Image (cartoon, rainbow, N blue to C red; front, side, top):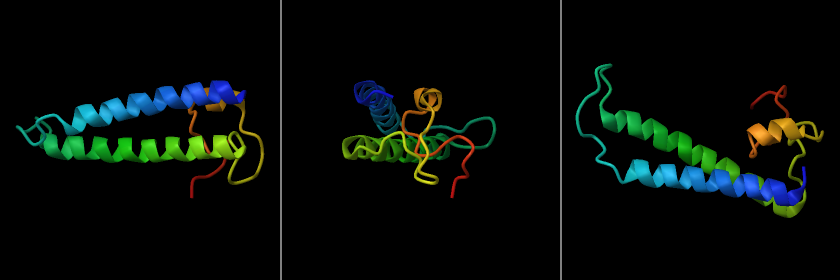
Length: 100
């Protein structure tokens, strides 16, 4: 994948996640209960944790892009297919490689 295209994808994803984090953390967390028994705080806390994990992965991908190792699996050293990076620009391994 071309570095400029990867940088654009990562910038868009970073903006999306940062907006979602801002929107979630600035809302009235904890107000009311949901029908499934979870209160809004529990729901939002899970979402915030997921978004922060995603943001950290995007930042790591931006670092790999600057270092020239973006698109290379941290597991096998093989090239990550562009199709996979289009779907998940922050991917650090090929789809078939296990998560640790």
